Length: 88
Image 1 (cartoon, rainbow, N blue to C red):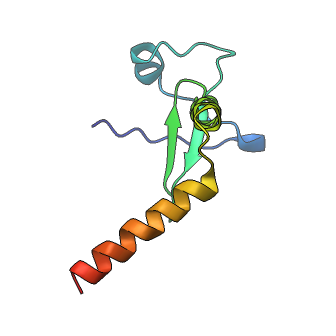
Image 2: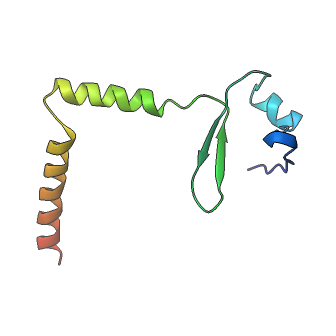
Image 3: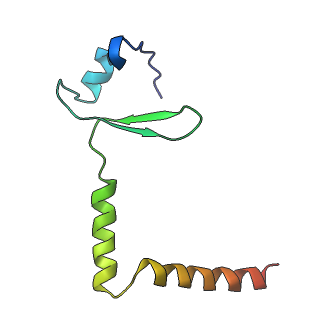
């Protein structure tokens, strides 16, 4: 794991170190994804996040099979109840 220190400039502008840009093929104008985890931890990904795309694809598949979030939650609750009864 490499750690890079960067300084924020005026209006929130930061410069990514050249070594990092080169290794990840990051060019001017590229879109980066920032993910705020917690406690001030921020992860930067050199690609656009596909989370929404993946979630939409999953939801579409579930709808086609007749599943819904509610039916999945009902099943999850039933499985948890069995587990809780089995291992108090």
